[in-house]
Amino acid sequence: MERDLLGAGAREQHGLSVLLDASRLLPVDDSTADVVRLVLLDPAADRHDSFDGFVRGTWNLERSDGAVGVSRALLRHVADLTGGAAEFGAVSGNHTPRVPPDANPLVRANRFREPVVSRLGVALRNAAVSVADRRPIRLLAPWPQGRRWAAAFTHDLDIVAWWPLFTLLRLVELTRHRAPGRALRALAAAVASVLRNPVWAGVRQLLALEAGAGVRSTWFVLCGTPTFATVRAGDLTYLPESPAARRILEAVGQGGHEIGLHGSFATLVDAGEFAAQRHRLAALTGRTPSGVRQHFLRLRPGATQRAMATAGFSYDATLGFHDRNGFRLGAADIVPGWDPGAEEPLPVEEVPLIWMDRALSKYARVEDPRAWIEDALELARLCQEMEGLWVGLWHPNLTPALGYPGAPEAYRHLVQTIVAEGPYVGSLTEIVQWRAARRSVRAAAVSPQGTVRLVASRSIGEPLTLEGGDGKAVETHPWPVVHGG
Image (cartoon, rainbow, N blue to C red; front, side):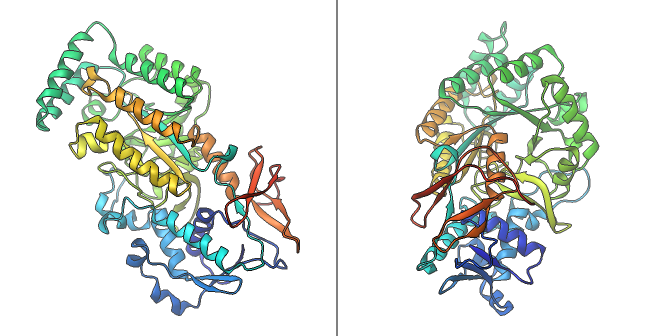
């Protein structure tokens, strides 16, 4: 697809980048090629694309022979939702709680369970196919190895030491949630574990499960120095250099899993603190982490990601809801970073967090682990439908002795069910690298017969499959030679 976007501003260009990526349409740089064109509509068309209509799935895609027209307003809406602009003004200062969920327009419209942007990408693809006529349509394959969707399993290592304290807090929580039966089962498991370390036992059980399923997961690890104040706040609770933490890090690394940083509260907008914790974790693992997820999902949209980028991180895995599960960015996939304050791109990939165990057990007061898994699978099915990416978060401390009877069996069912659906499963770094490289591919030239010469600004080393408008494979290329930016 050729892009004719004369006069588009930075927000509109960013919205186009996100939308075109979601559509899987191959961008074409050859202005002489007879291909479908994407054009900007007259500014008067903006009135047909309100933000409320956008989040509710009402989109104005004008079709004509060989062209699809989009309004500037629609592209700005895409940029604002995926870039966090609507949430930007909801927080201020350097020490702030999480962004309130109702600052998100999808929450206000009760559409947070819908991948609105991903669906818009599919709509753009269908519109392009419908107006192509004799013109060639080429789609980039969604994932490597012929996979049609992807899944990533992630873990936040919040607890290593002081496990009886956290069990006690969990028993209080279960009592408040009026779950006395579960509280008694948890208490019995805790008593039976007095002479053992249930945190380490839970980690070993989880690693064994994922090894058997062929899963490479991503672990986010706290890497600051705990104090009484940080423990009381639920922030830093263990010393990463302690023998117990080192044992876990070694086991995770030996299992072939990725280790990223779980940014403490102090990192919020502090690039120096981000860098210090990143270097400290690298010294422990022997590998510099490329990804980060903020503890308690606390961040300031734009400012936090800018600090992450300055510290050297290439992706952020924070953007999910803490009290519900769904699509905070409206996308069932990775999107390029954006600073809504400066209105400019950021060199950080955003990996939306789609599902988290504690969103249900802590905030929704749903204590049956089987219900958590049904919720996870419902969202995974939507990601599969969009040929996108499902990212789940399972805390390794969810074991009976720590207050979660039945949780390990539930997680086993989740892993086995998702893997059986045949997604591409990898660490977040592997997935991010693939998606960033695919986004960089474009056609430098298109012959009258429809054959293309591909170029890319990033390389991944995998063969690249191109599909026709019907979704069937047309040709497979070696990964294009990196050329240009």
